[in-house]
Image (cartoon, helix red, strand yellow):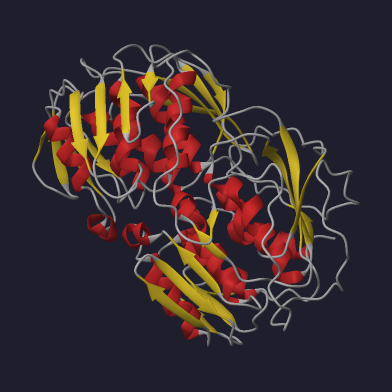
Length: 515
């Protein structure tokens, strides 16, 4: 167990490492729940093994699902999932997992008796009202408006109106179980724009891949027809959001970090890193995939093997010219270049003024389409090179808010000011991430200012000190990123990274030690 205050290692030389990532938490927990609701046994391969994923597995077991781990490797665990009758009388511990506290109650409302829910102390402060009110409107009985609560059926489904501006999980939670409702569901969002739309798109793609008819042709309206959820044998994509601190290390150290197995197409929010890091000064390319080692059959969770990157294969996109001196980047006087975007970069990130309306929805579809992963097919290696300069950014991260802590950490080390917008909903995450980021950056001598919906971060030399994590895994990794360039940073409770990446400390150390 790491010490309560973890001395974040400083990068003495440019990082040059290949960092394999375990499976996506967002995909894993959706896949496990869909497998538990399916019409027969299924397999979820390379699922993430972390606290959040373990909480989901435990919740599903308590409701009557049989989950048997078979093969485990650095890529994740293979689960054989056998659905059973959804039984009442159980208690679900949600921990601090938003996916468990918001995805499992709709399934629990189908049980043959009451199900109680509770979690960590801070989980009781996280927003739950919209989804609980929606479940009541669909027929469920619930005795509280937040954790702890007990839910009972029957739940028949039908039409419901909710305000999902606080979390896209309110929509995804209803969608995932809706095909099992007698009447299906029609969800109508009324309120400010829904954040993190890629997560809803992920949910819809996974439902369609399981044969569920989903219509999202009308803005802010989602319809799911009642019917079976097909059992599947699916493989979970790597967690692209967990790539964020490792790729950021390339910028901070003027190094090169390669993430193998990066999907060519995906609905994961982490794919926006390709665009964001380019805007902040990185050279981002795709390269021919490197061979992956065969998984082992060990029952213990292995640490992904991190190696020194070899000579970079021929990239599929052309990086910008010019090779900077291989030095650790801190504060330079280089002016901010005009932001650029690769031709195949995602469109979820808006620079400049905030958009006035959310992204256009996909057209309706109900066929059994998709792949065995979350979305798309085919992979490449993603290669990120630091250029010697970290440039400030002006970006609306409304759709990809989970990347904010890493982008803020880079902004604190940048040569020009940054403004992060559209992420007011982060105040309802594991902690108030905006207040926490501003407090901790300023604690180290920085200049971070909260706005109504984001942060303004101005260049200022940083010094060592304690970087508090607030029991938030992404706050902890943000502190590690700053610590690469600032001696004396100690991250409080680095163990909280176990929520999504239990081997973070070992992987971080291995990245810095790669030879």
